[in-house]
Amino acid sequence: MDKREILKNYFGHAAFREGQEQIVDCLSAGRDALCVMPTGAGKSICYQVPALLAGGIALVVSPLISLMKDQVESLIQSGVPAAYINSSLTPAQTRLALERAADGRYKIIYVAPERLTTDAFLRFARPAVIDLLAVDEAHCVSQWGQDFRPSYLKIADFIEALDRRPTVGAFTATATKAVKEDIASILGLRDPLLVTTGFDRKNLYFSVEHPGNKLAALRRIVEESPGKCGIVYCSTRKNVEQVCETLCGWGIPASRYHAGLSDRERQQNQEDFLYDRKTVMVATNAFGMGIDKSNVSYVVHYNMPKDMESYYQEAGRAGRDGEPARCTILYSGQDVRTNTFLIDHAEPNPDLDEAAQAAVRERDRERLKRMTFYCTTGDCLRAYILRYFGETAPDFCGACSNCEEGAQTADATLDGQKVLSCAARMNQRFGIKMVIDVLRGSKNERIQRLGLDRLSTHGLLADSSERYLRAVVNALLAEGYAALTDGDYPVLTLTEKSRSLLQGEAALTVRLPAQQNKKAAPTQIEPDEQLFARLKTLRAELAAKARAPAYVVFTDASLRDMCQKLPRTPAEFLEVSGVGRTKLERYGNAFLREIEDYFYPQNSPHAE
Image 1 (cartoon, rainbow, N blue to C red):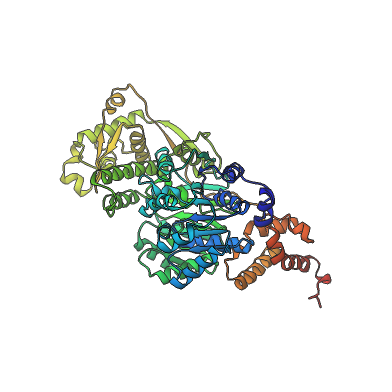
Image 2 (cartoon, rainbow, N blue to C red):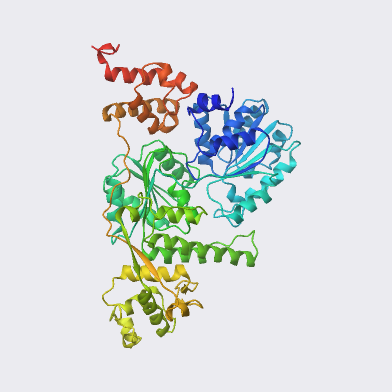
């Protein structure tokens, strides 16, 4: 079979997505590749198709057990012999898997980086015909990436230990220029093809809300998507517990996931979510990297993440099936303080010296500032994301909360001068909240005790809302006219650039979003609801028999396509998105019969 036949027969796709074919051709020709593709863009196809074209074995290095199980189950359902080797296997299971691998029973083997240089794995790998080594989540090899894992440094040692060097492909969803250079250098890539596909996920709707009551806002979002799957990310275990308990109290089938739970409970809760027994997962960022669940309709960040890289990767777990999905951040100023604390009190990395540790902390603080600007800007949210990752973007997308609700540009030069003057008169000793309170004329006990109510700037902007003044402060910070000190209690300070604004040599503008009216995410063409429900029930029954998540049998997108195309023959069923030869043989008759029974019950053998 050629690449297109493999794509259709095993994976049920009629055409490659952007960048996939170029990478498939490169790896199949024996050339290394470094690929940056956003979550949901189809990275796995880029190494799975070359693996099936090659004569030998493909190894896929992955950091997470959940990803390996998910991918291997999907491959087996598609007719591809695959296996995984990681710490979830007993020693006896590992030995059996390696024996079968040595016998050529598997085409694709997923392996944890820690296992690569063990004696048992090297005994299998050295004489084996390994044509391709794919490194997933490749940013983990770089200390400048957001998820540095020392175990990834073993990959280069493993390659060196092999009798014959395989073609190497490195894949990641997010990487800056420095991280890409690290990946290529540390993994020893040879003349790699560099591919960065567009970061724009057009099916995702981005939204930032500043709710007075986060739980009420979350309840509205969840209830707007009844029966649909969603992920709610929280920054702390305490928040996970509180939010999960509250959702369950409202009758919403929710589960939880964080590092404080036992391995057994985390595994059980994850399976409840993957198998659609629970529709909402409330979790810290310990959950989800590599999770391939396709039918996640919304991702809510109950707390703002620490950086754009993490946010876009986590938000990208929505809409992996190409269906419209919503990504919402419920922002508050406390999120900034919490994340600053987490950065400053993070466990030191034993693999970094003190200077490198300090550099990483400074980088993390800068990333937090950029994340904060995203949550407070009035500009197009999609454009902000794309520009952060180095892409050009129009100023208006029409599919984010700022664009859809409208925004106005205002000249804030004079108000910016007043903010800077107030901070200066307060001797640059206080944070943003205190400066804003003074400008708005607050007479709280602390302001009076410190005598700040006697400053000439007290009450100077009494008619301005706190939200507007925060937008002005964030514009000052973004343009470098002001800065925040490090530490648990950041202080608003002036910079060398402040003088140009104070003297009227520069101007300051802010974009202010209109009052949020909570518009719904983009809608899709809805299928026949009764038929769709019947197909979902059939899928659940078949998935239970196969002991696999329902979306591994067919995604929701495939079921919708069946509802629209209404196939009546095996040839027509093959035209459904996501249907390959193996799934046709395995499930085709059952779904064709269900469609026939629904529209033509008089022809059904089950009809009375």
